[in-house]
Length: 601
Image 1 (cartoon, one colour):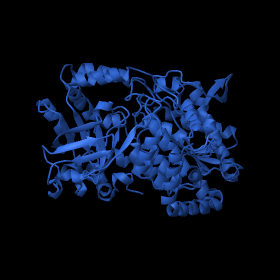
Image 2 (tube, helix red, strand yellow):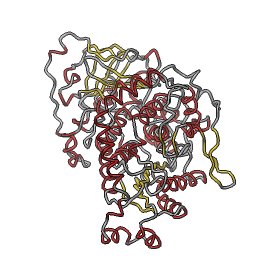
Image 3 (spheres, one colour):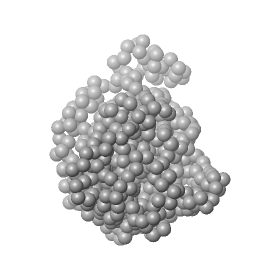
Image 4 (cartoon, one colour):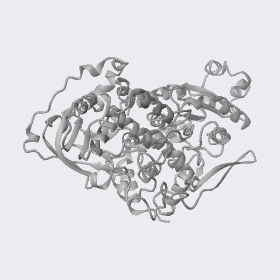
């Protein structure tokens, strides 16, 4: 099937826009690759320090002929999605030895849980943690003793930060190993109902805690289709996972077999062998466009509108909101996973999962079939699924038909003809809205504004009964320069209650929403942000705002709005407490949301 003309045009536009930066990037990584295996250039003293604790692997490491894998791990046991990584280094070392290679833990990176920090001061460090992860992974790999890198990460900022590091060390092959989702617990819609009952005071904290614990109940990724699971989808679409690896539950024989197979594959694609696959050459414009297609076809997290441009910049590729918008308009919405429906990612996987989805998108011409991947050339192998048969890991053709058309549909009869995200523009700035879970009748909202500088002010106004008419809630000074751009997901129950009372309600903010957010229209990542004097800083209570997610506009309709002086907020409280002091240099130097809100790129 020939490539869809819109996908072709978007790819050419990205290629042209990135021509100089990509050429400079490729020249750098190829020069590094041409220098040969790094360990050959280290002194004997350098190498002795690196191998001192490696016991039985010392002879192979000293000889320098066996590939040495550097493990960069985001393990901690507070984050359920990362708890399974505790045992991965031993599995990787075992698999490496069986393949005639060695493996070492090169270093660890932080991994915070947005579920723990949601609505708390620590959330203000969340987005910045992505760049810290990239920096920490860079420190780990800077020892320059590794022929390939194996990255262990799943969640919101961790995978993007690790990809930024993998691209920066683009001459080194990179394999990403996931841990998989936890088994299904309390259904996500039931959890949401309990949260709304708590928000209205109809139940107490004891009932809320019981529901939350029944939903988040074991090792693995949260089962809704938020940022963490969107990351896993991307890693397959972009060719950095083994085919079918994303949504296999932790602690299963198949999960262990995939982990060991990933380590073996890392040992096979180094410069020491005949199938050298440096990360920087896999991460080309085709890979990023394939990622955009996957994001739209699945109705994935809005956080990737921030992360993908930052990831791409690390590989010399420049993405713009217009690319997201064009791909979204062309690609059909083929999956419905909570918060877009009642199903969770385990149900999605059982219905055919990524193998079915990729096969359909390839057949319809929406993907670059010739993309390079860690598994080999061409994306067709990602339409297959792994099976453990008589103890042997094999890949078989994935399903050609959906096993549940309420969750997963073919490209020819999708849930919607276009994808899940829409670019917004207007006199309030540029932003984005996730429309895949917003009812069609709610995609246009025109109402007076209520202005807030803090999400807790919104909740307090709700408790005082102040929302009695259609309202557009504006929460400003939430951008990266103001306070690190926290997620405002804890507003979802409050705004959902207003919506269910029959009010037209929407959110506009220069902050973020969680990948789990959905049913309330939310114009997010609005840039320029209020702290930079952006248009949101000129708004006043009562201004009439029109949010039109159909044509992609956010405008203030009040006469004289543009002539006002922007409000300057007192942001002193954002600069201290819970580690915020350490990130002042980030707030001062971070780039705009439209470029990925990065400090290091």
